[in-house]
Image (tube, rainbow, N blue to C red; front, side):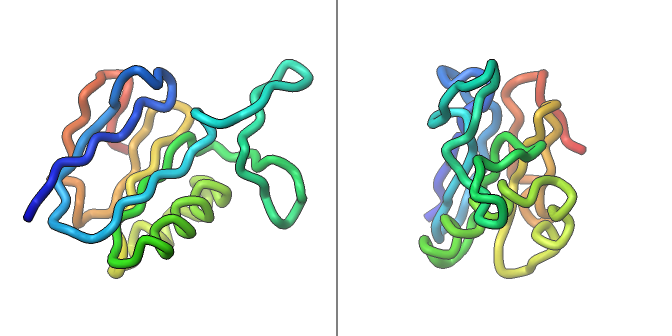
Length: 128
């Protein structure tokens, strides 16, 4: 049965930024806006880049992945978040998953297969 999923606004955790309808499967979202620490006047994500050993620095603020395996969607949402928008195209064209990514400027990137099912609820967000 179809169900509706809302994604938290990464700039205001008390609100949502978009919602979409999913026909089944698993949904995982990664971002640094709920769990982070502040040091040297900067917010640092709880997600670490395995190649550097430091908190990741990315232009993405939220990545949601929809797929058929919960382990896979959780893993991929984190990997895509770390990779940032420079690596996003390869994931947006993957036919086995659907991806919704939001960058630090409120631009929403998504797989073509899900775009028509997304409803943006705040005008500070817009499709690419």
